[in-house]
Amino acid sequence: MDSIALLLAATFNSGTVLALAALGLLINERSGIVNLGAEGMMLVAAVLGFATAVHTGSDWVAFGAGAVAGALLAALFGILAIYLNTNQVATGLALSLFGVGFSAFIGQPYVQEKLGERAQFAIPYLADIPFFGPALFRQHPMVYIAVALTIALAWFLYRSRAGLILRAVGESPESAHSLGYPVRRIRMIAVMVGGAMCGLSGAYISVVYTPLWVEGMIAGKGWIALALTTFATWRPARILLGAYLFGGVTMLQFHLQGEGVNVPSQLLTAMPYIATIVVLVLISRNAAWIRVNMPASLGKPFFPGS
Image (cartoon, rainbow, N blue to C red):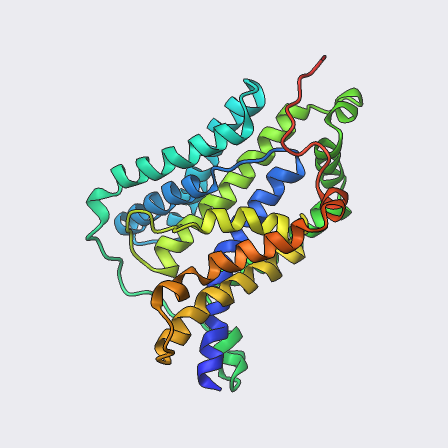
């Protein structure tokens, strides 16, 4: 039971990384923008967040630095894709490649750096409950913040006027524009908020989840977060559940290796990515279901006055 509790705790920790990034990408896509640069934004945020933690000793300042880095890179993407009308897919891929190279370059001095002893968190009394305490109530505060952000985003999208406008921009930007809403500005804000969320995820990886800086340490998590938005059919609650599912698959490989399961380590390492492909294949079999849930103008440029 102790082993299962630790596996669950690790699942929630790993799932938080994906949940934060996928929630940010959900905001982008609800506004009609596809940003494939999540991997690059997360890498740059990871190295800047780690560097900030090294120099300031504050995890929360590091999270802020990561969020700002993600937002600035997303703003660069937004200027190109929203205002200059470059191809969203090509621009996102370029941003991802830029982030990989730029993070490797600026991160060289921090490869050998180490953070101080990590603080241990526990909710008083609840953390002492057998099984549930170690599994649920000894997590980093960011794990609970991710859950709160999921609830807040669900309320924002479906219960607030601003959320309705955001969804309207993603469904029919022409109609929103005709009603007087600044479509491009709304999309730009959504892209920057989404980038900040990806940056927060990247900083969480290097400051809490690992904690260290290694070149390419995001290791495809940005792409899994992108797939997760489709898997969740653009719904915040489903994103959180999907993040924990993929997080569980990721942690299961380490659990099986620790138990001495006679399976090639390369196959166990590939499990999260195999699971991603299988899920996307299963979802893609029902194209009509995807079209019903997908924002109608996803990936389509908008030209005011055209």
